[in-house]
Image 1 (cartoon, helix red, strand yellow):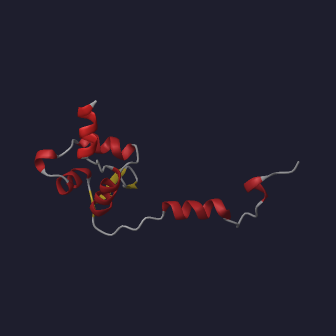
Image 2 (cartoon, rainbow, N blue to C red):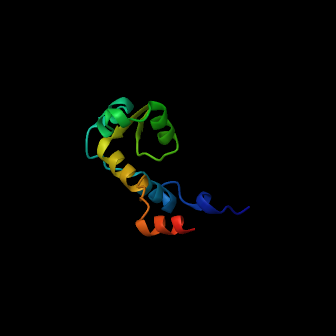
Image 3 (cartoon, helix red, strand yellow):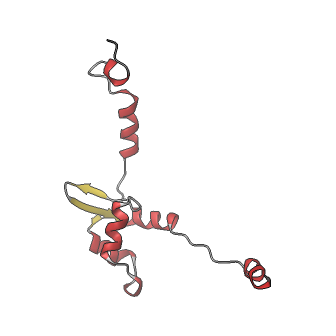
Amino acid sequence: MARTGAAQRAPGDCGALTRKLLVMNDMTVKGKLVSAEQLLDQVFAPECRPSLRWLRTQTKAKSIPHIRIGHLVFFDVEMVRSALAGKRLVRGRTLAAAAVQQAA
């Protein structure tokens, strides 16, 4: 019976799949790692700070970069700021679009 895929490779051969995983999981941490509470304090102003539950939901959805060490979750503040700036950018309406809506 002939085997296909990873079973045909030699035991010492990592293969392309492993190389892709290493590149995918390679993350360079630039700053100090902080907890969820510390992240919320450092990234958001007190009057517009989201809840800890929101942060946990975003972490679970993998919308915010995080580092898991065992069951503990840590964040790099600069990585989170850049991720939020890229993903959560909301563009305001332009005057032309507002004029078209008022005319209709």
